[in-house]
Image (cartoon, rainbow, N blue to C red):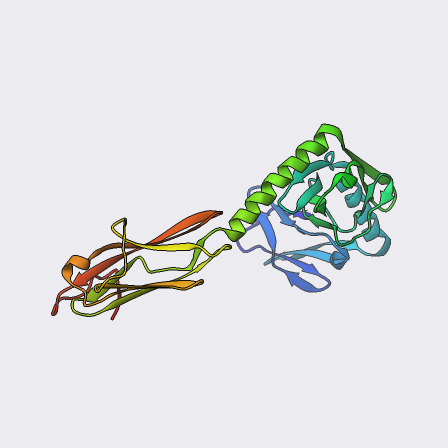
Length: 301
């Protein structure tokens, strides 16, 4: 909705109202004199009486637009039709969960009624299918696809007066390629979910006064349970009098006993299993009695 203002002066006031309440989300271009009220998502809540009020020291001028009852229904039907006409052909996107059939639109409104069909039979929402929409897309997800999902799909869009259709023949090489990509993405998702990882790590820099003991602890995850190694300056550390290492299925710690200046450096935890690995590092800065710890370090001990 827009309103054009002419012969404006600096003291001119322009306000928009809906059903008597002021609307603040408006734009005004002084060079053209056009003020515009944009409705990002049109639903039946937007029905009502709109007013643009221009006022200055000489008085005021009012422009009104009533979007009610039949007039508003006509607007919704016209908008729905334009949405449907802008719809692209059906496309397919493989995911780790299955297939996603979708149609892109310049704009989608929920007033446009959509239905999905497979082999001319309507698809009702079930455990393996899930329809959805956004402002520029309508889709249906098919989970855990099999050979039985091969065939012709149709999206039916009813604008309140006419029915618009889009089709996709998911068979032959198109189905084989989509299924292969789904299987690849599924394996990647499994690997990412189960790979060895550090779920709660370490600060970037820690500081500790010489003579104290420093304990660094990390929480880890992965299936199967990851192998764990601790390193100092990229060389593996083994338990001894100066270092104490504990390893549990979900966490591991290293304690540096009676730290000295030579213990400064980079310490890392390395976790790995058959699905992947991860390394998390911390810089340990040891300082002498009477000195101040580095400003960017977390003080320990």
